[in-house]
Image (cartoon, rainbow, N blue to C red; front, side, top):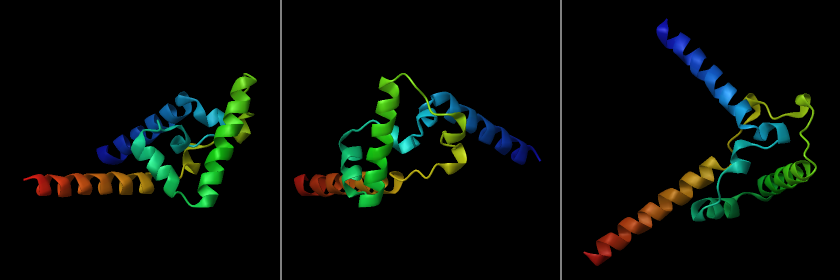
Length: 110
């Protein structure tokens, strides 16, 4: 069907984009590379210790490699299928709470 064909194409495009972004060549996860605005900083503070430590390790290793102008051997690159979007749940929670607070504040001011 057209739907399954377009689904396969979308998956292929996402994998291509993921590899083209380049962070996987440093064994970074997508969530290691998210711009740290206030919401993201708050989400990072909520990470369990093991996820926080993994994040710091990924970033430190990537910085070391970058300073040496190196990338990892291809077999060590993060694969699209290995992504776990570890920060997403915490970030959604932080954004939801911020919006809730804003709504409460709006009700008080009215």
